[in-house]
Length: 165
Image 1 (cartoon, rainbow, N blue to C red):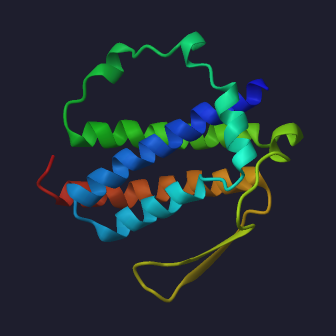
Image 2: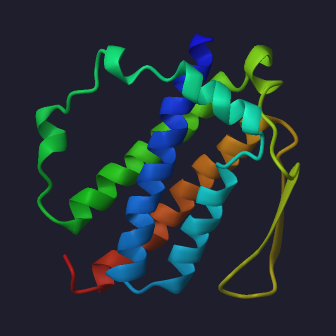
């Protein structure tokens, strides 16, 4: 199923990009809140469905990937800020691709996640609760995409305040 190949590539891209910005937040910015938020959404991309994982692997075809070579703009980064910008865009785009593909019934019925709702306590204030309905697989990735947009704002404020640029 070609759609599983698309899901596989974009889930990998999404997780990898989140891990890059999560590690910069953790080790360079020393920002616990941003790191925990990123870690949380990275874990939301994981499925407990072992047959799905097998199907994703069986549909992976790296040798025949027509665009696996890096383009010039991907080869070099000027600084950590450049890495962060590239990886935020990468994650947001990947989340959108997964979100769109999961709107197809043939794919949505295959994916299974642990929870159908997300309840998040605001890490900063410890008292505000946000509830998000993620009853459909695509809504989980829509939530992830919008969280990445929100985290990006806080991240760049923290990055500007730091001396690591």
